[in-house]
Image 1 (cartoon, rainbow, N blue to C red):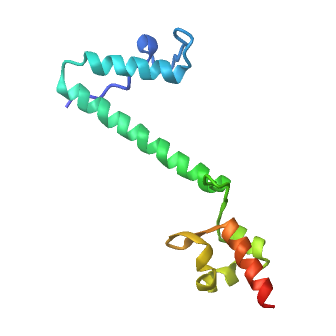
Image 2: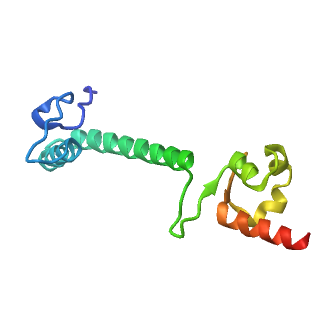
Length: 135
């Protein structure tokens, strides 16, 4: 099988992302890739391009997820999603306590991915208010 070629870039050089027609380098690269897709005459080349595009899409999704988790997700209401450490700090308990008492915090739980649960700041605040009312 022939070696796959990289996605098209202006001037054909992947190191030289010159701006063409005032477009940012990314848009220019995508425009060149679109042209290559439209002009492809070999099915194998289209398969290569699709594979490369899917790989880039996956890399972008992974990067977005990592950035979102690192910075704290925000939904449309402005709520922030907290990890266990941030949750412990907010409610004034230890990380160990949060892990052992997850069932008491389930109303604030927004995602439970294995050992990495995420909690809603707004729901935690309401939960703390309710706990304060019981005292």
